[in-house]
Length: 100
Image (tube, rainbow, N blue to C red):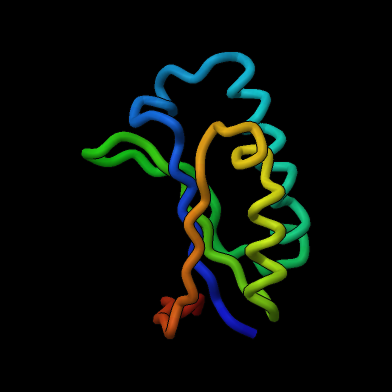
């Protein structure tokens, strides 16, 4: 199993601060779209980021098949509605803090 990082890039830098009601609904569908990965335990991290460039979304997910994950990301309501884009990368290795 491989680990992938995805970045959700919204249509504008101020998206998190000024999204419309329609965009809020799209974001709710976006979260629901990724829910199976959360429920299965394959989604390690998922959420919005605010930084000096504005806002964007971050996800870290484990998957067996990169093409399958890319196809799933392409069906995300954020992508299909033109609300934003998803960039996906394969994480070569990582370090995770101990839970003990």
